[in-house]
Length: 260
Image 1 (cartoon, one colour):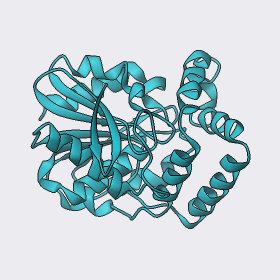
Image 2 (cartoon, one colour):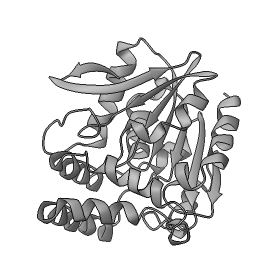
Image 3 (tube, rainbow, N blue to C red):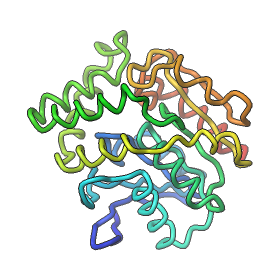
């Protein structure tokens, strides 16, 4: 674990391997440990950075709203500190929202973009209302909110088979402070639509979706790649492809990086 200080806030990251840089950005209620299986594999041929986003893992909170832009700024701060000029960014769920903000703010730094169980669309009106409900729920019963949130990320037909893995995800999620949860929910709620990133940029892009994702409904999100140069990979399971489709995902990402 390494750290930099950004706006008097400790930002934690790990840095392994040598070669072209790949940046891994976790999702909401996750932290850089979500990449513990994938990162070592990728580091055989690449330099792999896993960054704890604001209010998650060992990165401290920074205010009452953690916008996707502020998170993108901390990613850039880590890259600048390490004197890295170009990188492929892989973002899971909220990490994908941060990656898209980064792509808009620092386009010359992006070598390739992978949205893993993520979307370039902004929250729908209904989703924004649900974010507000989630903020109330987590303030009322933190532990219950976290446990319910994690269970819903996995497709129903995999929950028994992945009981131990789901419990581990819950334990990591419970390390996320209340302020980090609320600030991230506020930040995701106000994020802008960035479908133009998929349409107007030249770098390689890959969207990975789960057909039984209860968080990002497949029917609402696969259409965003129409008339773009974005590749689509679909898995039959849910929101946690790095666990539910672990081996297949490794192959997909290896293939994507090989083309760089």
